[in-house]
Length: 124
Length: 259
Image (cartoon, rainbow over all chains, first blue to last red; front, side):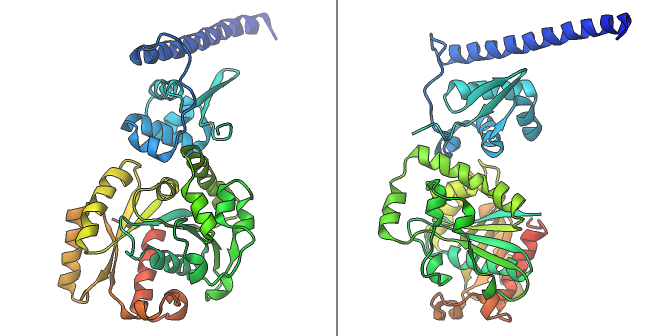
């Protein structure tokens, strides 16, 4: 690799890192906003709540759409959900984090990506 | 395109089972690979209609996580004319099983939904089934709503009975719409439907009252009652008007032409 190539890679790498950190910050802020909405002091999510069809039925429309997509896919990132719902990734990310706080979904980080899923097996 | 079709209704006795069995048989007669599911765990009936005396595994076992779906499927292709494939997944009719299924909690129902949803992979994608037809329990209860959420298309069976109309309308608005389900209405047990003006009137009425497209209009056939559940029309009476209506319905669903 030439010196020029190395130099051109470095800023890209730094930018990528900045973007990654901004995304995490954004997610943390979304969680904080949701917690505040629910008037909760601690940052612990609610205990596991089953994402069954009656729960899906009683959800507000915007959350049901997101939750249904996770039900169908099993496990997905905000990006993948947004492709199915045709809504913005940031919007889906906010809804998904809201569903995690409500206890309906679980979130797992793998490298840069955050995966959301309904934990069907560990419950009960 | 392969699909999951749920047959549902607000009230019992609207003809769900008759429609499910015959619709599945019609798809098979048209050369498709079909599996019919008995999701009416409170009152299982397909084992009797399809004359399956005993099964090693029931659909209950699959939903309980005791076995894979392949163990549950019963191959009944020989009863259907032509090259199509006709399978059934039956609900356990024993009183003990009915009692056990009616006592399930929300977490179990959530897992059952997961197992129904995964049929899309195991049966439609891997085993190359063209159609899964779900016969459900009437009204709003877990097993039926799980089936509706899993399905691509919902056939709603209804009659002109006053006790059925309002509930069906509400169910369409407050259940299928919320899950964004494509729906087709089958008006069953219609008296004197032969005149064109009567058919047009019914069509307009369905669009006006229910705000969903009409999939089919089924006259009140005495032969259906006389058969006492012993007939699969697609198989036994190829020239009966009901068989022709079923052919049309199957073609409409197949062509995605329900408007």
